[in-house]
Image (cartoon, rainbow, N blue to C red):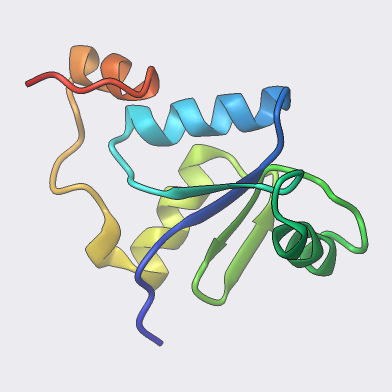
Length: 106
């Protein structure tokens, strides 16, 4: 299976989602974020993964799915299922902090 993206299902105001996003950005991993409150299909996907609940963050990497994983768990799954999506190198502290804030250092 060719995996072309990491999908992170979230909802507004979720502190666990904020933490996961920051951890993934700090490590330079690109992902697509989907708000389950804005996308009924996304909410249905999350329910199918989370035993009927809309628990977020829920992450999908190809066939791998996890409810409320750590950034480390997501990166390990990407390494196993879609290594080509891993950043070429681990960002340094300043770059990692900027990534966590959704900014870039040019």
